[in-house]
Image 1 (cartoon, rainbow, N blue to C red):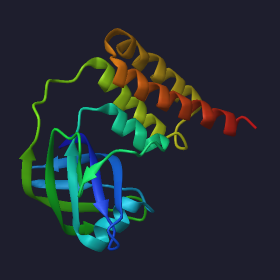
Image 2: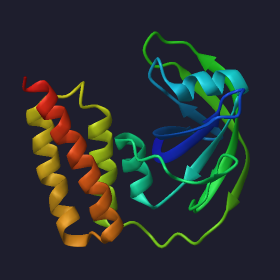
Image 3: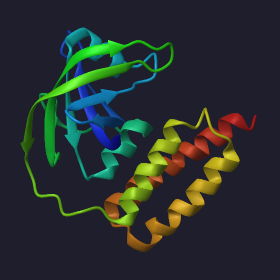
Length: 182
């Protein structure tokens, strides 16, 4: 199994688009998406049976989704700055009380832009985004320890986009700490 971090875009039956950073599980020709209950992605996929996987190297999109900065433009369900995307279709659902598995198949994949590779700062931001998505599940000590390690790669290789995304995520961590120190 391989897990790829992507931006999943879905829409509800009213046509409202939702973006969510997710680690999708790849099993051969199948894509498994495991959203937590409740989630907009889960609801939308169950309603429409369709989504788009956006393969994006701008880590601000991942950080922005988690910190409320959701001003990313889409053409339909395709992110404006995506490198490539796959239209997917829901095939079946393996139910679970916490995280059902949505088994999907790729209908088509389109390459939009050349991928120039990731730097360590992008990895640091993606891992920090995952930590932020799980603030309520991890200890503050674990979060602080992981962030300290991730900051090493960030400090060595970050560009402006990575620094901006990191700042957003660190603001979210600090807000969480303030709210839970009372």
